[in-house]
Length: 189
Image (tube, rainbow, N blue to C red; front, top):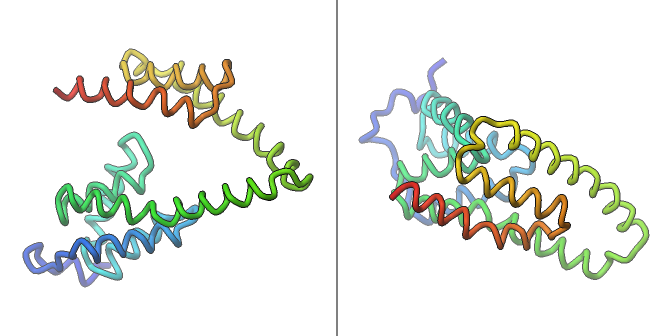
């Protein structure tokens, strides 16, 4: 079944303002807990008509193929198509605003109530899950033929720092991110 948007030529489709692009992605980021791709589709296809259903599906297929979160891959591609690099920046800030605020609030609550036994038990339950995810990531990375890629080395070094040397993840990421960016920058030049 064709969406009404499928019949609209590109030249006649609405081109969103940067503010509207920000707001659309802000709403997706604020409401998309565990299912942002569903809200992104609703926003892009049904609510605003910036993409047809077919274009969304094609974009999602490509986004799933690329490394990284599907929502961000698709959001960046669509935002670039709609408003260029400024659209990508605005959309990224929009989709990250509420999660950023949410993490700040949770961090403040943890700082205040982190010593309570119930909170400590919850955190002890989360730690093995996080460790298992890191271990699975390390195993997948180590067994990948793409390990010859210099950027994969950054992932392996980050895993080793966190898993074996007990460097906190934010510190490890802060240390390794510049190296990863430098390698990626050099590869595209």
